[in-house]
Image (cartoon, rainbow, N blue to C red; front, side):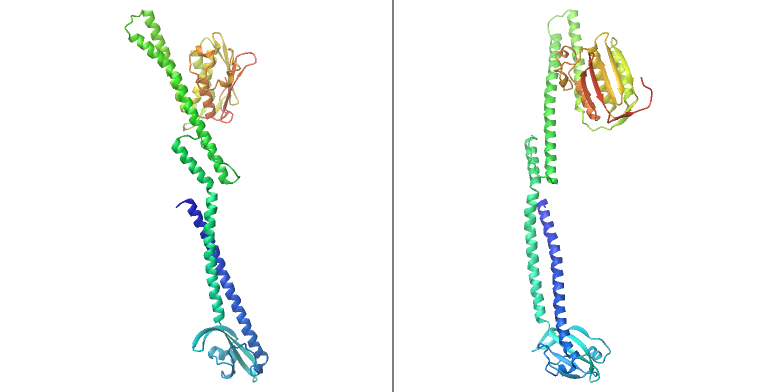
Length: 447
């Protein structure tokens, strides 16, 4: 069953229950009012005799209703039409019971008809108690109630039908945004292109759902575009070292006789290119893991920085590494990724420092700063240094694939942080990796 059909049934069901309650209440209220009118009429007619016991014999007007006066001994004193007398009537006549109303059946013109009867005492009749009986037919009342029941039945049917139609119209209009979402999702599933958008408008929950759906589509479209660009860039970057490898291998396998020095240079080139391929593939894998579900663990960021500094001293012995201040810092995140990001920052600074250069490293308040004394960032390069595969003109002569700082940005974002690149005031590059939201002070001594 569709959601529209369910909403229609719910609307019709709710209206049916409400209308049924209203109709039942109306019916019983009307029946009570009609019965009260009949009882009032009977009470009025009985009061004529109660106030003047001789009124009955003096041609009292009882509206054509059968009436009867009973003496204290239960005998009929007078009547306009004989009414059956039973033990309860005799008890009222003798003063042993109060008067009462009751529903009875009487025979009239050979038919048994429903009637309403009042039995009321007559004080002082012949010096003693007596009773007056007045009977009123309920045929007209029953017919009126029957017509009322029929009217209420058709009113209920009409209300339920109107509710069903109204529910169908309202549900169709209400679910129109949901239908558009469904159609858009189906088109995206068919075409594989999330460029579809649904119209937005209004301020209700469905309008918010449409806006959220469009936001999701925009994020999906951006993700797919990033994926396509990533694949294209990776293919382009991989093509160059693969071509060089293939060329050198073909030369080594060829019939050309090579001098030992030539062969050594070719083997060195193969080794260097294979190392670059390995680094490139490792970077690509690191970027591909961005956003993947992994369990977070607490780790000491200052220990990661210290280990990276030791590695940098070995890798770049000609560079002076100066840890200004490294505060004990605890981070809830991914240690292996953070190790890669910190090393990328130090490696980048070491490459641009040159022989005799120096690099200052500090970790204060959850922010890692790496500053070198190299040429710094060119103005046109600085906005792009964290893009994947971006390499400045000066960096193209150096080994690398342009993934180091891109990985740093991905790792920073995975920890809810940011990374910024700028030029130091007295020369050199300064990179800030901030993890204020994920870092907190730890225990231990500063460097």
